[in-house]
Image (cartoon, rainbow, N blue to C red; front, top):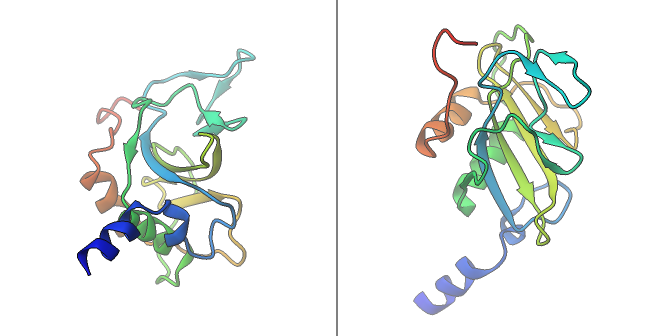
Length: 157
């Protein structure tokens, strides 16, 4: 019995995936980003927020470049938090995200991600989630704390 359980744990993470993302992935990592101001893109433009993923790679403002790897249960928590039915809550849509989760394929390419702005209570996913409404921000916050994802210094952004 334990041997069967151990084998299940060693299977690639896609075996645990739900309906989102509808792409094959082998691991998920959590990140902190957009911690310094101003944010300047590669063309010299000042941005309110840099992207978590840019052209399939981590964005330039990511603080913890290696990320925090999520286990299968944590991955499911992220997926439920952004795809499930959740009570309505206030959202300001200021959009200054500082935390996110990236889903990687076996070749290490980012194939899906979730960007989170706890200031306005909003998350964006790529690929987009059909009929997406409200997210479980409390669960996402607890997960960022559990993974010890870096947050910007208070009063600096």
